[in-house]
Each structure stands twice: as structure tokens, then as C-alpha cells.
Amino acid sequence: MDGHQTPRVAAVIGDPARHSRSPAIHNAALAATGIEWVFTAFEVPAGGGAAALEAMRVLRLAGLSVTMPLKAEVAEAADVRDDVVEVLGAANCILPLGDGRLRAANTDTDGFVSGLQADAGLEPEGLRVALLGAGGAARAVAWGMAAAGAAEVVLINRTPSKAQAAADIANAAGEAGQPGRVGSMDDIAAADVVVNATSVGMGADTSMPCDPTLLQPGQVAVDLVYEPLETAWLAALRQRGVEAHNGLSMLAYQAAAAFELWTGVEAPVEVMRQAAVADRTG
Image (tube, rainbow, N blue to C red; front, side, top):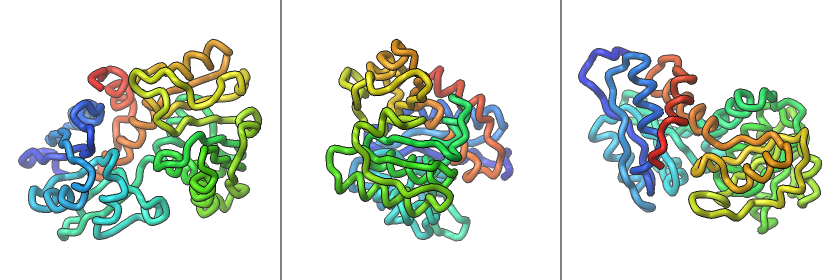
């Protein structure tokens, strides 16, 4: 794309969005690549997803990053949906196709896999994964890991029916691995990778998604929460000698994948990762 035309605008939408790290991450990438766009944040409450997409058409926005609580709404309202969006029923990235239509994509799936590779040096193939939670984040991770060859994706949730529904998504993607299944707490101890895909531990919340004593050195834990950068769960795991990572790499890598969809330019991933760490606004 021509980066020397009149600056275009891209944005993150959601509620809350004002304190999102996405503008810092994307503006750093735009500066590094010389693309003369600006990236901002728009507060859009629940129920406003379809209207936001109409505004995108009218304002000719270059792209939208989508966060809670709009991922399902924009998936439904888009003209074209990627296969993974059809399965997950959620999109975190909207891009214009140039003919007035809008395409919904989900870069959370690859974002988690790339973040795990970067942080822990782990390839998904053959791994046993225990996922705490069954919401949109858990479904995206389940799809991404199963599609990348994880041997087992175990969904652990207080509501068994929700866990089974999320596990079914792993089944759909997991042709190279064994089926996902609803697990018990015993599965945490048997997993190679344990992922907190809930909001437990976010902000001032010091509660933990599971008992840290279930994990031992040799396992890898990932907390998708990144506010704060070290949750109580991560701190407890690190004290036990468990390799533990926050969700910043997933945030940066999903942003990098979206950046490439919007611009057609290779994303400066390391610049984006550094911007994610440096931005402490929320």
C-alpha cells in the first residue's frame, strides 16, 4: 500500500477501549514502517458493533481491531467471514475489501501460538494443553493450538456444557491431534502448558484461576491477563519454579497479524512487542 497518501485512520473499538494498549502498539508499527496512518481508540458499548461497522464504511477507516464486548457482534455484521470466525462466532479484526464489503478475521488464534513460541520456545505439535475458561479467549486458543497440532486440548470450566462446547471447537480444528475434551483439575498436573483464559486476576483482583500447587517445574503457564503484568497467579507459579508468561506476547502477535492484513506490509513484531511492554496506560 502507498504510505504517502493522505493519512488514513484505523482504530480499536470496544468497552472499555480508551486505555487499550493497541494504539501504542500499532502507532509504533506504523512509524517503524513509514506508513502514514494514525491508530486510535473508539469507545463502543455492547450493542454498537453493527453501527461501528457502518461507520467504518462511511468514514473509510483502514481497519478495526475489536475487543470485548463486540467480537460476536462484528462477526455477525461483517459481509465476509473467515472460516475460523464462522467456527468461533467471534472476530477481533475487520478489514475493508475495497468494494464496500467488510471482512471479519480472527488473529487471536495465531497470536497465541506465536506468543507461546516466542516466550517459551515451544512448538504446539504434540503438546498437552489445559485451558482454564470456556469463553471467547479460550475458544480462540483451543482452535489455534489444535490447528497447530496439539495432541490434547482440555477445557476446564465450572459449567461442563460450556467446556464441552469449547472443546468441540478444538475438535473441529484438531485433525492433527486427539479430540479436545472436558477435563478435571487432574488434567492441569498432566499438561505441558496451562493457560488462564479467564479474567480472574485482572486489575486489582488477587484471586487465582486455579491452585498454583497443581503445577510443577517443567510445565509452562500462560496467563492471558496482562493488567497487571504479573498477576498473583503468575507470581505464585514463579515462586514454585514454574515457567510463567503473561498475555502481552499474544496481544502483540495478534496485533501484528492484523497489521499485515490491513497494510500488506510485514509487521515489525519486535517493535510491537516492545511497545506493548512500554505502554503502561491500561
